[in-house]
Length: 269
Length: 286
Image (cartoon, chains in turn yellow, green):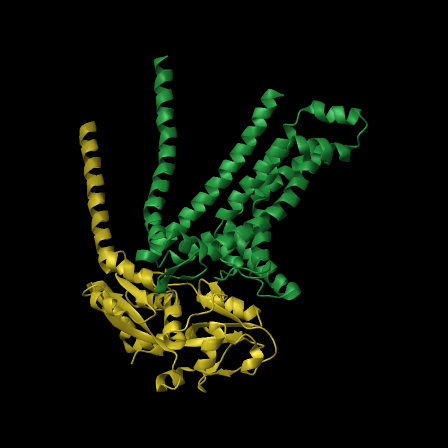
């Protein structure tokens, strides 16, 4: 009698284990992991939320870490999709599949009290290189200029260097901050500051200057008048898994693109 | 008897595994970091201020300077407050106050460093920017935050050192007619000097290794600082800021930054150990 009961128990445990195992298998079949650029992360989180709402039982996991880290994670198989907020290098283009999901303006931001409202690319370059050190030289109030840059390897920084700096180097005296949020915090508090960040994350606590006469608006980006624009990419290694493809399809669908526009980005096409 | 032996050998294995962990880490850091120093050239690596990994320029002088400046500032602040605290707590404070203050100081050690950094960014940085000028994120801000962070380390070791001074010294001094204050400055602090120096050096070792709080308040600029109000990047922040992205030579250069840090901290700890050994030796002779 005791023996049979024991046998039943063993059977029950075994059955439970099989069921749990099965369940896990299904979950991982429907789950997608994204890793990469902190500029794309907040938008990917919004997309993920809507996607899982529409597709119950699907899971999307979004992590930051930076564009290059995202590419490495995809390469190592740690993530299904890498988020990259800069153009791929020639070598990376060979290695990965590139999916343009949206475009983002790169805003040149200053303190809300700063009188400077427009700058040419040449002037921006000079300010960040440390060749212009007083706001008076670009039509502002007398006072020092404090450029704020991002850390080496950030997609935002690489885009800024490609679009604005060219061969010239960012001043070594520039403050270095680790995220869009930290740059914004600093610009908000420091009247002398100038920084660059994702246009989608700019709000009215700070000022974004017009570049070459074009104010940084979505319309100007779409019309090609505002030239500091970078691609926001999803990157996969080879073909995406069915679950990842389904999420990418959602992001590229009119609904997904509308969502991104509402959050301040510019649609892919 | 047999069981004693068994337990003894088990404990020995545990102790050795802790040490072998240290040895493995050291070997790994050096294996990853030393080749790039040799390739770039030690002179270039340690004495150039030009750090531009994307162009293959690896010079960490700015970061060495930054770490030393911030640590020196923290040591000044730490020494003034910690020694003051230690003297007051051992000599002047009523027992009730000591009983309340000592755990409070030890509690400081339990606050996570990111919290120190956050408080620094929100309160100290704007204050420095408004009162003294500059960006606010600066050597000064980092020194103050670190000075508070190393307070518990220095204070508790300093208290031990002061309490270890034989009672007869103090009694003798008082008996000779010295005031309480004269006794403290001329007898107590002198007798405990090596212990106090060791306390400060250990505190500095802690300060130079701190990362999170420093990244948040130091500004991380790549130029050597010219004034306490200039932003700096320390060795630790350089590693933490860039390691997420680094590959190839850049990654190795960050390990080499780690090697530099490892050597500096080893020197500091050895100095602290040597100083406190000397104290022990002298006591045995006396």
